[in-house]
Length: 454
Ligand code: PMP
Image (cartoon, rainbow, N blue to C red; front, side, top):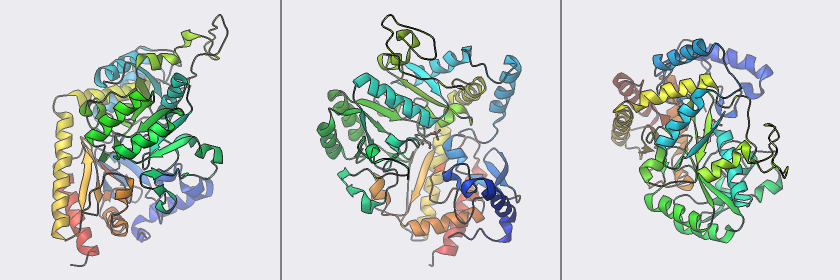
């Protein structure tokens, strides 16, 4: 693999070696690693990343999709500095006015959101949503879909990208842990469902209905495989019937598919919604929103809560615990609000989607010319390149693609200044300009010319 070992990335290689002495694998998150060593960045601007060796890259990773307005958008930077000047500090740890202001935006945009709690990451958002679902239903297990990611804690860390030899039948997948250090008990708490297969999903949900507190899903798997319309409406119907809380994890799709996420466009109202990424304008954030009666379980006025010094007469702990030192961080919320204000301007999201669509069509045309089976899959401003002509509706379909060729192309693209983490999806920003698109298409053509013998 690779070929990034040449002298061109000497600085990255040396920085990585140094990091390896004190950071396991030289990284602070496993996802940052790729062989032979990741590229170490120095600065960024708009659609570009610049590495420690001075190379520029057009960034299609955009911090895993968080940076919808690109790196260092002047209005986002301004909002951060203005906010610090205005409040005279970095954080209060007490309520402040921006919390309700941003929450109001979410209740306006998201059909399934009546009330909101902020967290510090997408992971914390899905974690809180699941706890609310358990408390609300009095049930303990959850169901998730094969190939869907919701964060790195035990109950959802199954079958995100499982080895298919261990993953069971396609219409009855077995949970495959994504980490060591999980217990056998964890495996019994999560039911795995096949995405975009309503019949099998419904059968499994009916079988486990008495134990299932929630079904959680990415309405668009990985941000690029949309749920089929019948599937997502069918899922809403059956979860309602079976008293299972439906959680949409819109951490990727939120503010990208539309200002109101995928739920707005599908016309489906989930019970709870998890948000993150774009919402923080590049700072760590998450949020849970949902039905009033479910969200109110976290209301400290309900009864005894260990941190808020509220005691009910019965002195029972019947408040759902949710706290965090940095929740509703005023600088983070200011960056998020500035980002949302940019997206709210007429045509911004439509233009971004149209630009993404244009890039996809141009890439498809190049691969066709080189006789490489390929399709782009996606929605809004996120897409992926899949090297197969067969229909792709879920995780197992994705595995029919030519991963070896995709990897070889991705490494060549890195050398040509296109930043996509090998095998990962593409995210676009409002900062990507026409010249970026042209250069990206040219780079793909060069990579194909080099790697695919004609
Ligand atoms: N859910 C989804 C759909 C995500 O894409 C992610 C992050 N990639 C998460 C949850 C977790 O978010 P975070 O990394 O902010 O904890």
